[in-house]
Image (tube, rainbow, N blue to C red; front, side, top):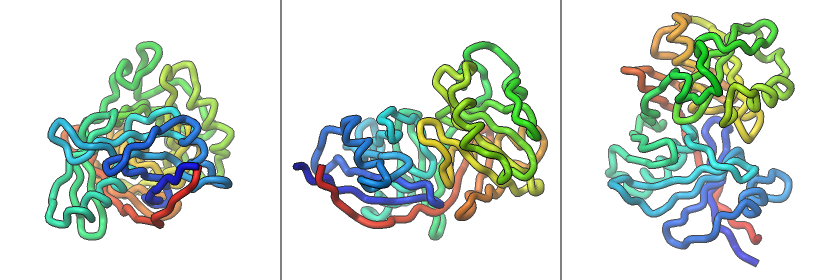
Length: 271
């Protein structure tokens, strides 16, 4: 038996099992990821994240894994959680640089919240990526009562649909087929968005490789960017999720995301 120590954290209910690999490395296998991620027999999480020794002038390298064992390039809520751990370790630190498969993100403390610069957002079809060249503002996927999709990459792929009464849509039904649609060779995250006013959105999300989650930081950034590009909102928007709000500011095609990151508990599990 092997004892695995971890930290359980969440950002607005989007939850993570975090393993600190810096003091002691353990093999991160698909079997381990699946066991820790299981909500009945493990700790349970939307993603498992490892903190690794830093290199290349960053404060930490992280790897992000979906419950099935496949890797995710970026995770906004997860990055804020990692930043919370690192800020707790060094309270004098003002800015952190955190490296993931999507590149280097900068994090800052904002009172009780954490702010992360999610970097450049793109709508270029080959960077989403899409399987063929098409208008990324009008992806021809139809959900009754919604606009055509807006394809966005925020370090990972997203498609955003705008409509009304998003809580009445069965996301468990529409999410899987869109995630795996032939247009998306790397699959995609799916956001359903309701515009409340020029500074407020409501959002639900189907996360690629995970399913319905309570929040998604990169999804919130993608939704605000898409809404701003369609002239539905300003560039500074509150995104309302089931357990609270994220605040997204689009500056020079970069997304600044601010929100909470909380430690649920420290635990260990024998595998």
